[in-house]
Image 1 (cartoon, helix red, strand yellow):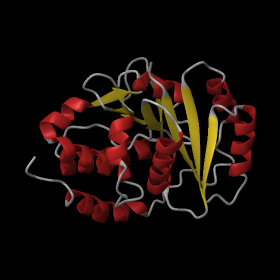
Image 2 (cartoon, helix red, strand yellow):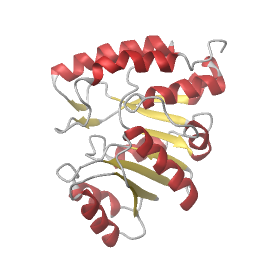
Image 3 (cartoon, one colour):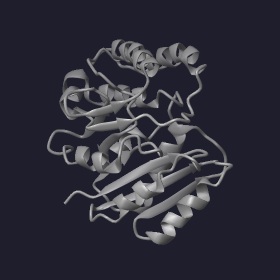
Length: 245
């Protein structure tokens, strides 16, 4: 039976945590626990999470970092905390605002089996799906996605969707070292997969899954100025790729 540990990085999410949605998920018999990682929040984020942990003591856990370290290190810290403290088969992370729901995360996790070790959501608008984001974010996202796809030299539609699921064993390796980039650490995960397995084998171990629903929430922590850092971060990541694979 698959068991899941879902990591949720949080930085000043007081107004963005959909408590009712979390409670609906936590009431389900889904073999999942949630590990919130407080990344040095200065608002009431911790209090909200602590109340959830009181209400669901066997399913909600909190790791609190003293200082803001950025999403990449918050997720990475959560990975090692979970590996040390919990027993599970699959590890995932999603965004605190639940733009991708934990239910959909579990649906993706079911696909992580046999040769598939890494499954990730993709915000592809198709018949029957609900993908809501502004035209500006969509088109800027497509430009960035194309740059990333070219850097990695693989055909991937959406590396930046905040829902990814791994086997426990793979997570140990992919998160072992600190990340170069705070925002593009997702891209580094793909680069590490390519370096670990080589391109052809890595592609057989990854699965991109179109989401049924993704709703853009206001209050993103990514600064508009980060687009200018994108180039240097992508270049630095490209230098880590083993081109012999």
